[in-house]
Length: 235
Image (cartoon, rainbow, N blue to C red):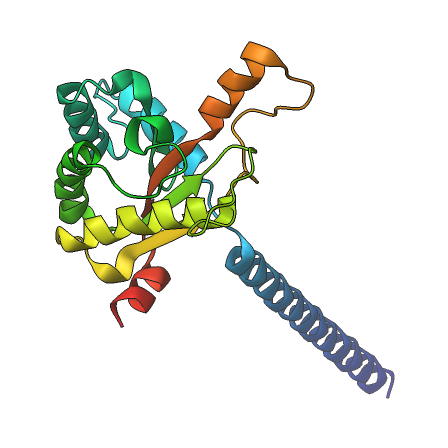
């Protein structure tokens, strides 16, 4: 009798241990599923830093004894060559950005004061730039920005700096399109005087004139297309 009772107690103890292990495994599996879902959500909302990626590529190349090449080198080299040929290095600035290339041109070098018409000399320079853009228009969106200074303008055809900046950008875009750059990747934008390079607050005389000269500019941005943008452009 006692032997049977002892066997029954051992069976009950074993059953409890088995059920306890099963409960623990179920809880663990639930926790792992929740953690997996959490990291999936975090990954979906995270955006990798292009600057950080480039730094890693640069340090890796140096560590391996290789040569690191900055992104968009081919484009910047071609643009620089054209600008040197036209003696415009002092009137322009090329910058490499994380998503493309930015070319800034002083408006005084390209347009007559208060005018949005593209002079013949300017057309010559833009035509050479268009050749470079045409080779890259499947990879980049091309934004042309017009920027003015803060001096108001009011004429029959140009009632404000909004129209002046927009018309200049649009005329450059129309020229690029006429030279074969894809219509669907071009974007003219007029900023008037709302995004100055130099803050003119409290500036006077020569400093003010210099700042206004810097603020009058045309900016051509080559913005690299990501997969979703490229799909939208080509449809």
